Amino acid sequence: MTDAERMAEVYLILYAFENSMREFIDGHLAAAYGDKWHDDPKIVNTTVKGRVERNRNAEVRHRYHSRRNARFVYYTDLGDLPLIAHSENGWKVFRSLLPTDKWLHGRVEVIEASRNLR
Image 1 (cartoon, rainbow, N blue to C red):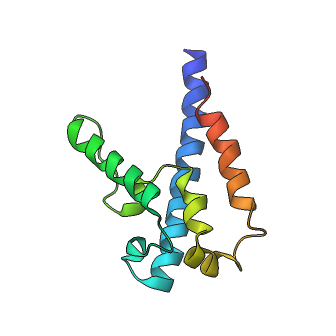
Image 2: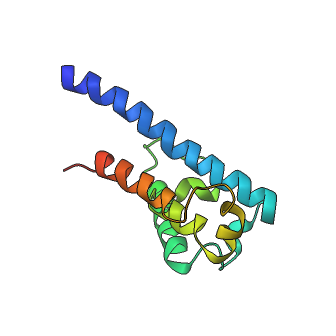
């Protein structure tokens, strides 16, 4: 039980981080390109679109799980967020907001390592 309680605290932090990052990216891209920013292939490549579609399909198959937020960005994998921010048109928005082009990727790498320990 002690381990479960400790992990519950960590989960809350990871959840807040991931969804804050999604809101940050979605908000800035929507402000720059509109609510359909994810339709721009210079922001979201076909690989990321494929993972989003996979995640949406999995949600339909497993209806007993809680639903994600309906917006595109909530169906991305955590590792997709730096790809979106560093895309050709994404970086035009985030260049002035992030310290370097490697910064976001580094933060996500650390979080993914903690999140996906096996």
